[in-house]
Every structure is written in structure tokens, then in C-alpha cells.
Amino acid sequence: MAKTQLIFPEARIPYGTWGCSYFPAWQTSPLAEVNIGQFAGESMAKILSLRNTPINQLDYLIIGSTVPWHWKFWNATVVASCMGKRVPGFQMEQACATGLQAVILAAAQVQSGSSNTVGVLTFDRTSDSPVGVFPERRSYRRTEVISDVWDNFGFDPATGNAMITTAGVVARKYGITKGEVDELAAFRYDQYFTGKQSGFLEKVAVPLEILNVQGKSIGMIDEDTGVKKFSLSALRSMRELDTCVTSGTQTHAADGMATLLVSSKSAAKQISRKPEINISFVAKAEVRVSLSCMPEAPAMAVKKILSKTGISMKDFVVVKDHNPFAVNDAVFSKVLGYDWKKMNNNGCPLVFGHPQGPTLTRVIIEGLEEAVDLGGGYVLVFGCAAGDVGIASIFLVN
View 1 (cartoon, one colour):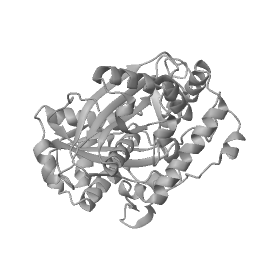
View 2 (cartoon, one colour):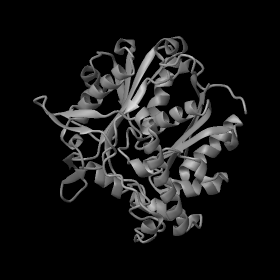
View 3 (cartoon, helix red, strand yellow):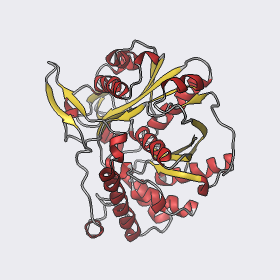
């Protein structure tokens, strides 16, 4: 196994101080009816309690979300109050890279010595996303109506293209066939349901009750609502929306939250559920590729991080990504010469859904749990983001 220096030698992720909600699909659960910031803060407190992690360990909070929510101006401070711990903090966002960037920022906060234990809390609610009126003097109408989620899914201001178009562009660029993409997607569904049946999902996802403003229960979030298994024959019969892209080979909008802690080495030994497990930050890389080539960007980010570290694909015990399109994984396999069947064990966003902010945080949590089950090693987490951006990070589980 290759050896490399750590990007944040003083920062650690204490084992087991993490968890996420299930990700119910757009408009399929009571999450559509609550303030997602309040829900996320209260859920983080619940998860830390279940993990036997004292909330008073936190001295800072970094939150990440991409969809506006009521009282967002107050960002991390109001969410911390909902969590029950009045600590300072801030909000960040980088489209679908938000979940990973928030964790990296937390590590930098610890590395700088500014904080000892940082809570990372990412969340988004695509259901009932805000619709507003924006004053626009350059428009003949003087105002523009904004639908935050759907406008951005459907239009890249730099190209005029929808996100789905980028998958078609990249599929044609690399000569990927629909048959290959359908086979890949069917395999991803099998991986998710195998992980669910084995009990793996229960290690990371926590059933959470939803309360209304009167404090009365309006339902439980206890599964990734909206996920159904597609057979290969069903996928092959679906109409192409763009080259190699069908409704079954792309992800779906969802709601949810995910949280973990980042701390100093000494604090990690105190709050980890298994202090003998050491989780460190090895490296991070970002790239930006050509216009409308977003599904290609993650592979290029991985190429960059491998070049920087000297680590090779055969050194990883776990490889997981944010894959809004099955095309992403097909391209990654071609660029890196890596068998796509070896990655995304136990699930991936293509299947369990995409609430944007917490998506990559859940991927990290699942990847770290899987690495612990396998006895440790290097973990590769990567994904794409709006603007044809690719991001990748390597963690080491000892």
C-alpha cells in the first residue's frame, strides 16, 4: 500500500459519531412540510444522543445546504439553537459537492487550531422549494419569477443547457452505449437492496419522527421512500431522455440530512465509539472540465488526486461516489480503467436519491463504515457539482 502525508495531520473523524436521515423522494414524506433547518438541528442532537456522544463536546458548527429555507439568514446559529448547543459557525454551499466540502472545511478549522470539535451538518429539502420574485432591471418584465430547484436543474447560465444534457454530451464523447448504462444501473440497484437486506443501511441511517408546529407527530422517516428496484429488462425498455439517460438511470430529487464530527486527535480518542479506530484526511482535489461535461469531472478529479498522492486505484478498499447519472460511473470506469462493479457497495445516490447538500456526506459515512467492516484502508470519495466541477477526497481508516 502506498504511503502519503496527511493533508490535515491534526484532524480526525471520530468513529461512529455520525448518522443521517433516510432520503425520502421529492414530495413523498412529511419532510416536505417542515423547516428543514430546524429538522436538521433537532435530528443531529437525536443522532449524537443515540451514538452516546455528548453534545457539549462541540465548539463549532459548519452547516451546508443549497436550497433556501426560512430563516436561512441566521444560518448555523439558528440551527445550533435547534440542536440545543449555542455554538458559533457558518453555512457553506457548493451545489452537489456541499457534503464533502463541509467536511473538508471542518478539518481545516481543526487543523488551524481554531476549534477542537466541529459538527458538520448538511441538509436540503427539494420538496416545496421556494418560489420568489426577483427584481431584474434588464428584463422587459422588470421582475423574474424564480423556482429555486427546478430552474437550476433545467438551466446552466453558462451554457443554457439542462443538467441532464451534460450526461448525454459525455456519453457521446466517450462512446458509451445504453446497454452498458442499463447494466450498470441494474447492478447499482442490486447493491443498494443487498446492503439494505444485510442491515448495513441501519448502521448509518436513523429513523426520525416528524413533528408539526404544535409538537404533534405527522409521520416517521424510516426508509428511502420512492426507491424501487428496477430489473435490467425494465431499464432496457425505458425511453431515452438523452443519450444513454432514462428515468431509471438517473437519480431523483429528495429531502434529508446527514451529520458527522471532525475533531483533534486527542478529542477523537475521547468521543469515538471505538477509540482504537483512527480516521484521517489524506488528500483532496478539485477540477473543472469543459462546458456541459459534468459527468466527466469526477474522473478527472480522481486522476488529479492519484497523481498528487502516488496512490493507485488498487490501493483502495472502498470506492464510492455521488453519481446523479449512471453515465458518471461508466465514464469513470473508462478513464481510470477501473471495474465499476467494485465500487458503490451497499448503495449510492443514483439509487437512494439526491437532496444535494447531504448527499456526499452520506456517501462518506457509508464509505467509512464499509472500510471499518473490511478492516481498514484507503477510502476514495468523489463526485460532481454544477458548473462542470469534480471533487475527490481520500480518507485513511486504521
